[in-house]
Amino acid sequence: MNLGNSLYHARKKVGFSQETVAERLGVSRQTISKWETNETLPDIRQAKHLAVIYQTTLDELIEYDADEQQMQQMIESVSEKAQAKMDWNRVWSKKYPVLALYSQQVRVEDYAPKLREMLAQLKAEYGYNDTDALLVLKDILARVWKGQV
Image (cartoon, rainbow, N blue to C red; front, side, top):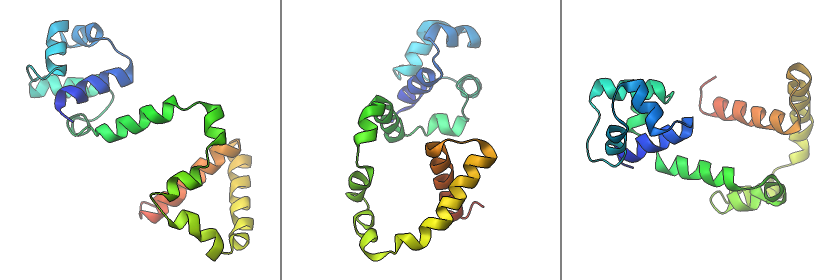
């Protein structure tokens, strides 16, 4: 993705108009438009101010990932009802075949009691609902796997 698109998507993400950003930077709305259409580029000081306004880092603003933005938009466009019907395991198993196979190989019941205990602990200690407790546990597991904790 180019810088103009990054600037546009970052601005949209925080819900600001071009006018609002222009006022905060002391430039014209047309200047913001030109940056977003790659007609011109902000100087480094302006880019740093944009990162602050858009609540991101300068690196993230410059290296904005279109795929992440597209995935976010796709996720947000799926209704709760449709999500509940979705067989996420089947969908993800197209990318990660192990998800379709592991239940035939791994004794899930051996892991279930400890996982239930951890879910219950998250719910009791922090008041999470079932879904939030699951998401937090998943995130903790991912951090452990990445060696972040």
